[in-house]
Image 1 (cartoon, one colour):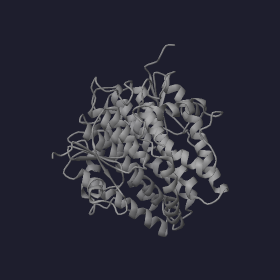
Image 2 (tube, one colour):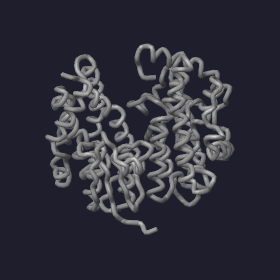
Image 3 (cartoon, each protein chain N blue to C red):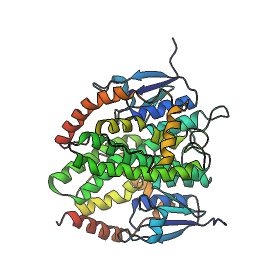
Image 4 (cartoon, rainbow over the protein chains, first blue to last red):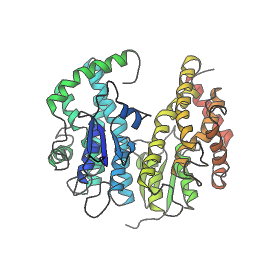
Length: 236
Length: 222
């Protein structure tokens, strides 16, 4: 049996791993998947990502690449020919916009979502909801500018920013289930609500959003872990 | 509407992020107009051009604003092809982006806190910063620049280490870039700061020291 050219070290529940999976699918790249338990961390993970020991890691021809958006750019640059769609836009300004918004989302979105699950009371959740609501407002606006009337941030097909933001939809639905408060609502973000449906249904994404009930199930042990870390003053 | 080819940079005199952009523009020989910003009294122009984050630097090209210094660096590299900054090979590019982000997330905040704090809090921050520098040390061993023989994207992205960390060390009376523990990084610092373009594109050290002293006084009266 030959060595698989492309391997992904991932975890079924990780939105960051999902980004890599979508990118590989867009480019029709077959890959071998290693499901990482993270507890304990596998030797392969520790060897491939010694700096962070986190998933996802892409291993291509034996060389590891870490950090989800960096991996997505790598995939786009490595498999770039006329046969598969581009993930990043071709125009430098559009690329800068996509990267800017992806950076913004990564700084603001998941930390707030994590905090919503971690803190104990509704009062404590409130400021984090405010952050998510602001992000939604801004990204709704960004959608108008980036999509230019087309179905996705990337235009006709799922692109970099669709992947960056869309990968969080699964966990967003979990917080909505847990606390009954919706953030992505028609009244505030009509374009994004429609985009979210298109994104989830797109062939590049279908089946990659983790099962809702399974995510809700693991949210409880995660909440316990994150609360324990918060209690001893560690970053969760 | 006519689009101006004019390049403008909104930044602040002691901003390490703004300096990255200046280095990139100068290395490529791109003319630009500089607009100094008072970050404590943000101008209407800044708020209009970067309404989301309201931070410097902002590059304006063809009347379109771009924010986030690392994003700006890649935009500059893709727009002006002379003196390429990013490596050509995708794996090397991923590698460069990874380490730029690593320093941003693991070293920058720790060094900043070390500059502004004292006692146990400072000790903890200094240790965290040194751990991060240790990892970067491994990446520069045996190389003149992170980019190889010439300055590249990663040198520019990490360039703040060469000039801002020593200034912060002075302001905070602490040491991160121990020359015995980190000989390779210290050698890179010398190479970087003596590069003909870089050495003439550094902020006034006195201004920086004064400015950062005032930032430290905000939290640590000592």
